[in-house]
Image 1: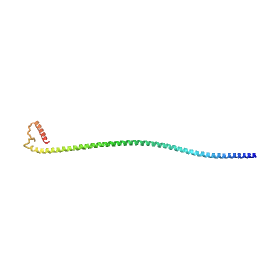
Image 2: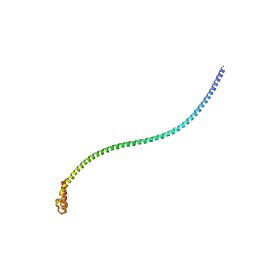
Image 3: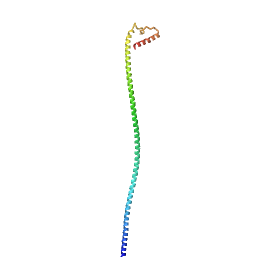
Image 4: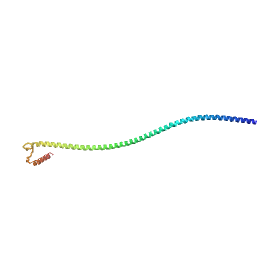
Length: 185
C-alpha cells in the first residue's frame, strides 16, 4: 500500500507538475499577449509622443519668437516712456520759463505804461504851453501889426531905421528877432 500510495502520490505530483507546466505555458502565453499588446500600445504612445514633441518644439520656437517680440516691444515701450517723461519734464520747464517770462513782460509792460502815462502828461503839458505860446504870439502879432504900417515901418518892412550897410542890418535883424522871442516867451 505504501507503493500504491507513493505511486498515486507521484501521479498526483506529476499531474500537478503537468498542470503547473500547462498553467505556466498558459500564463506565459497570456503574458506574451499582454506584452505584445503593451508593446503595440507603447509604439503608439511613442509615435504620439514624437508628434507631441515636434508640436512642443514648434510651440517652444514660436514662444521664443513671441518672447523676443514681447521683449523688443517692452524695450520700445520703455524708451518711449523715457522719452515721454523727458518731454514732460522739458514741457514743465518750458511752462515755468514761460510763466517767468510772462511775469517779466507783464512787469515791463506796467513800467512802460507808467512811463507812457508820464510822457503823455508831459506831452500834454508841453502842447498846452505850446498852444499858450502860439496864442501869445498871435496876440503879439496882432499888436505888432499896428506898428508895421507906415509911418512905423520902413520900405522893406522893418520897424526901425536901418542904415544901408548889410552887416549891420543882419546883426540888427537877429537882435530884433531875439527880442521878439524873449517877449513872447
